[in-house]
Image (cartoon, rainbow, N blue to C red; front, side, top):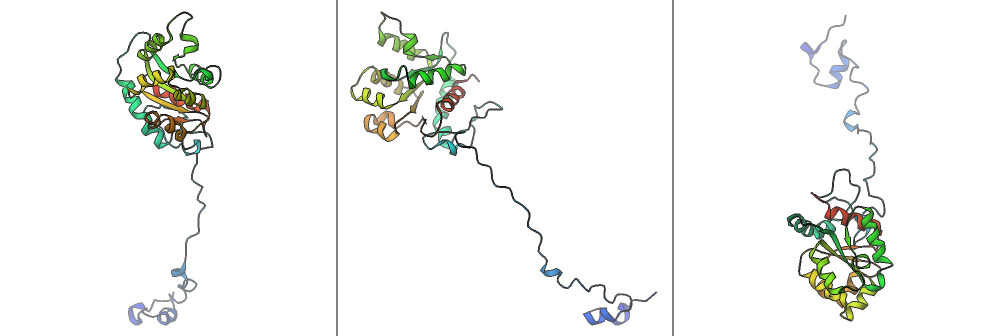
Length: 236
């Protein structure tokens, strides 16, 4: 067997290693090791929620989070702005003591929307188990509308205002909807729902209501808006 010459001659140089009968040539073929670069690996694209899965005045595609009150397994996504907007409302809902015959939601809307957008929102909410005070079914013939509205406001956990072009017209005339809003604005339990219009148009008519953030159907469905409201008023 060939003997290594390192103890006598040393292997300090490449020629010394090559001249060794035991070690000569072992390092050949590895001279380019220092330039080795690891192979690149496939990096999957980051996840983006599908269009329409979230929703707010900023658009459904930006929904990317869930508030603390969302139950496990919920598929409803919110934008960070929506979570900030709804958190104070949720906190007040949680503070309210249980009351008999307490409705989950008081739906304020324009008279012209009672068979259209307001009815659609009402139906979506009730399909999700939300009890809604809705003038179309809760004001009996021959009763005082204003008095029934007062009672509905007192016995509702949250007020929602369906802001439509018809409501903006009504607000300019200072009708019953305006009186409802005055009572709702006095509490931090109000969520505007903008439909077929904009917050800018609302601020032109009602700066106080327009200063409240809320939800929008601009790039979200009415069904998703209802889903968020249903989570907002759900029991703890």
